[in-house]
Image (tube, rainbow, N blue to C red; front, side, top):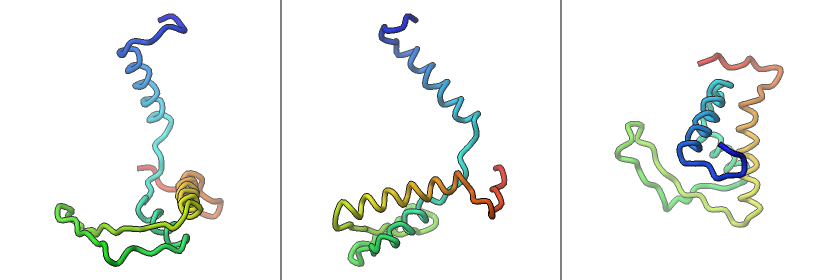
Length: 104
C-alpha cells in the first residue's frame, strides 16, 4: 500500500475493522437510557407531547407508545441537542460523589 494512492475496498475494510476492534478493546461505554435522557431534555426545554398523536407499538412486548414532539424554533432544537450531549457526557464522567458503575 503506497501512501497517496486510493485504497482498495478490502484494505478499507481492514482499516475500519481495526478501528472498531480498537474501540471495543479500549472499553465499552457505560449503559445509558437514551429515551429517558431525551424526555428529560424535552421537558427542560418546556416542550410537551402532542396530545393528538399517540401510536401504540403492537409488536413491542412492553406496549410502549410513540409520541410526537414539536419545537417552535431552531434555538429550542439547539438547546435539546446540547442537553442530550451533556447528559451523555455525564454518563462517561461520573461525579466524585457517585460510585462508578459496575462493569458489565
